[in-house]
Length: 258
Image 1 (tube, one colour):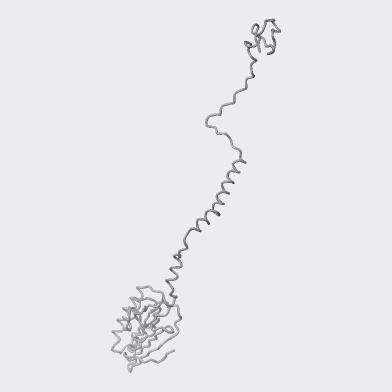
Image 2 (image 1 turned 90 degrees about the vertical axis):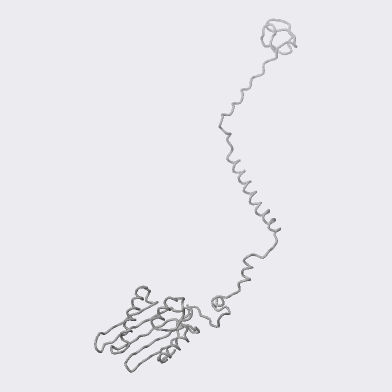
């Protein structure tokens, strides 16, 4: 404490001041001043206290662990409460038992004829020929697939001598058809056509042709071939039996078959 007379610091239990001798009243003496603690610096505005990087890593690991545990614990619990209803996939599979062959069948009860896939090899052929006294010669080959009732390819040649009554009309038809084929610009493995004309007294007109893939939904090509050769069509195709009957009735003979 401090002396009430001279103000100097003395002991708290002193009765008289050691410096001036004045009597001291302990109730009125001033206590010793406590050392003043420096105030903590106020945080600067806009500056967040820095966090320990290790603390951040630990917090992130705890969050990730909680999420993973939730996936393995909560999700199975929720799925266990669902009803086991048949899935859409099983329903579709049960309702669609058609095989590839059944799906290809175009008949669906409306016809007794079934067209095999066009991928099957063309391995059957019937050759029809006509030779008349005036030297007109026609050869037509009908190719088809084993087990099919439809013509896949048609090839052949027509030879008419210059003195034939059909020469002029055949020449006009040949030129017109040749222009149509060229205009289509089809690949040669689909349609080939050409002709030769020898303009002499004993000359001749000869055309040769090869029309393929006629059973592969090429209705426009079928129509062109039918227009040129006169073969009958059925629903955009050449039916083998109809074409055979037409050629026989036109005077051609079946000379070869394999």
